[in-house]
Image (cartoon, rainbow, N blue to C red; front, side, top):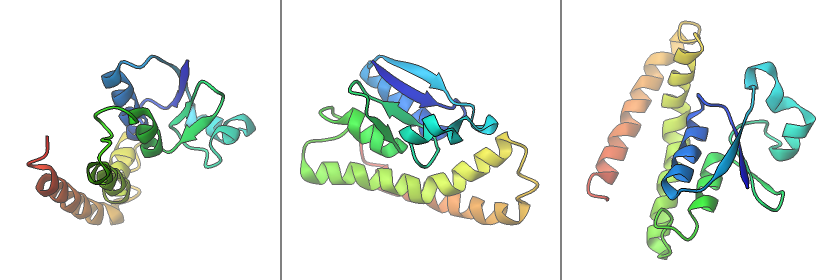
Amino acid sequence: MLTLYDYLPSQNAWKVRVLLGLLGIAYETRIVSIFEGESRTEAFLKLNPAGAVPVLAVENGAAIAESNAILACVAEGTPYLPADRLARAKAMQWLFFEQYYVEPVIGSLRFWSLTGRLDRNQPMVAGKREAGARALGALERGLQDTP
């Protein structure tokens, strides 16, 4: 049985939950209390040396960290990760794009909003919103004709 080490507000963990659900893959959830330091324990750092969720523990005891690496592993052999080399590279392109252009800006704004830190980070908000709008525009242009 797969075990997903999760923090429910995490959008990176949410992506993994969505794909597991779309594929009908059974898994157990292990909630990680990140603000209480659970992701910094010795046991968790053995799963992910970076101390972040999500982490997927697989059947053989191995663990995979980083949401997009988990997505690629779970999607292997399904239509969500095409076998065709170019189509597969395009799927990976958008996964990399999301982690570089979307998560650091839109993800930061969301996290700050959810944790009451938006005012504290106000000097960066306008720039992140502009970068987020550019990222969403690129997604719209790049994916508008893609099923």
